[in-house]
Image (cartoon, rainbow, N blue to C red; front, side, top):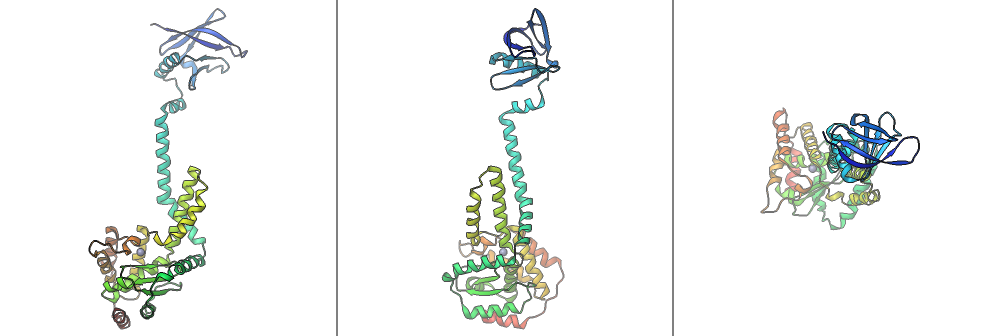
Length: 354
Ligand SMILES: [Zn+2]
């Protein structure tokens, strides 16, 4: 077996003075050199390696003060590869050697952790945040939203009174104050503000053909208010941003994001779980009031109908997915229900349609 000659510096462990030594590098085996006329043999198993960008330190395991320093990149590589083959490189050095690959894995791990946060931790956090937020907060942001939009809304006062009367015949199982208004607007839309104001466009009323469908729509919107979905999406968005900011160190962005989100509350769409939850809430309200829950299922087919190429506006804030339709169908068809005729609702509905 042959060896390679190279030069290095030897520290004997007694003084800090380096000694120039001539090394014999025996592949996958050992390093030998002469010091004070004595031949020293360092087997790869007996030493540890520490590689910086352009220096290699080889230290004796039994005496850490005794070491060799090598600066020649070619020699460093030769020794290092050779030592690696003899499996004498520590696990953390191996990780460092992975370089980019290691950082890529680390990045993927961090991204996965953030994704888990979004899916599990943030919804949970937002529930807790909502619990400790007084309902007065919902009312305040709802009031301020309504004040901002009031000037552009054309409220049909007469129909609003009828709708309010219609709703008062339904038990929504909530202690929150609810105000129902009809807006003269051909856009097929209905939405709820967090203060309990529920706005129904004339455009969607035109499409609705019976009181069961209308009750289902109001039940859905009322559940968004009752379950405080606006506050929950707001706190989800904010806690998500806070976590990402904490990871990326962008703390300054937090405050502006809170402000942005509060302003854009109108445009935030409910997530699928909130939509399903509101459908389930609507179903419960219909059942409790002995109103035929088929109204809920019929409501979906009305909303799914496209007007030409235009998609009804309501779908942008209350997305209807196939999952949601199947979920509602299951509710309606897999459970027993009793429905009775509601003359009062029928009559008020007829008046609304005039
Ligand atoms: Zn909805």
